[in-house]
Length: 145
Image (cartoon, rainbow, N blue to C red; front, side, top):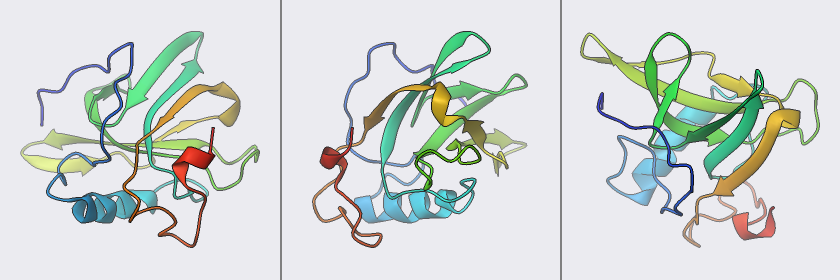
């Protein structure tokens, strides 16, 4: 898990997964739900693959399965969460990240938080039909922008 790379500038659509839980879609969903509990202010059921945003005058890219750097160490992006409150000032996007420290998996808590006004692009995972609406009848990802 320590040999991951930066996300590509041009995205490639990939099937839904959570790093370390690639055994099945059910395994990835269980891992995704576990990380979702750390999302600040709650999260929608949207499965986000990639988030492009502005921070300190730079355009940054976070993508599941690729490297994220928080200024201290490289981390691995495990999940990206859309805030439950669509325009709430205190409802940021959350980027869950993990890394290995002395052979143990460590999650950063709190996750990286991105203001909604700083988000410039979102790419969703194409989620299998059996997964759509599983968390209380949410819209399918194809219905969102």
